[in-house]
Length: 381
Ligand code: NZQ
Ligand code: ZN
Image (cartoon, rainbow, N blue to C red):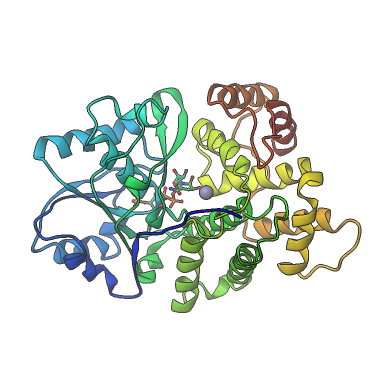
């Protein structure tokens, strides 16, 4: 095992913590206050932010959409350059925070922002970012990744750079009170799959990473089983913290990682508008069945540690069934229906996009070729 690890994001967790931005953002900064479609105007978050920024100069940019587009974010970049803003405050879910990462990096770059997503520009510098999380799911509030869509070409691509990792993240579980059921469930599923992507590979004897991943999966499973307690402070706090810990770099340190479910899922979102988490629930069970031999040992470990299944020859198969039932129990579909009526045409389109994006050898062994992706999609559509 060999790795370097740091998570430099300061976390302000708990009720009332939004006020902490007044000192978390240096007072001489000119702030871009970036948010989404307006949910923050209905739950008091907007008012708390404005109140806490009393000592700061700030400019607002609203309208970052779910699955944020470069087209919209480029307008925010223009604003930053025009007004010489030097701090980005993202208030929202993964989409707004990812959008802030793009804006922070593109604002200090002279070329096209999209260059960042196609690897033409390597991000080494960015404006500082602070995040107020309103939807626990992605972990974006304390990681260095972002996923941005170019609407014109239906490309949904990711970039990672330490320079865009938020300096601080405010996680006040009270903000979850206005989350629609669909988004609450999305949060459970996304955090679950993030953990699986860093755990369901092959055994490397990493006791700490495996043990922590299992603790996160067990917590998320419990939250799903106790879904009727979702109006309870403790339930909300547990989901918010689990989702954060699932993708903050810790459980993935020094162990193999997969991410094929995410890469295929991103194409489903880009082409058919499926919510990110739901794209994962569609792809993952079929991907695990497709890759069962390579993943058998970890599936068996998960079956016993997380689902308390009895050991037997078909334990890996039963673990995948249990994962699928977990999604279905949350009311999340595990088959794609959004593609219309021509299944073959849809699969060809998705495969063409995967190829175009270089997603031709996915998974911890780079063993998921386009042919495997085609098999997975044939089962999932
Ligand atoms: O835009 P507003 O009006 O705020 O509404 C949002 C949006 O419509 C709403 N919402 C958020 N907080 C709310 C709320 N509604 C009521 N009350 C609240 N407190 O929820 C909707 C969805 O928000 P979004 O930010 O899109 O959801 P999520 O956090 O699931 O983020 C998804 C995006 O993150 C990317 C995904 O690809 C997708 O683009 N990901 C980012 C990752 C990362 N940076 O590490 C990893 C993930 O795997 C993922 O790919
Ligand atoms: Zn995800």
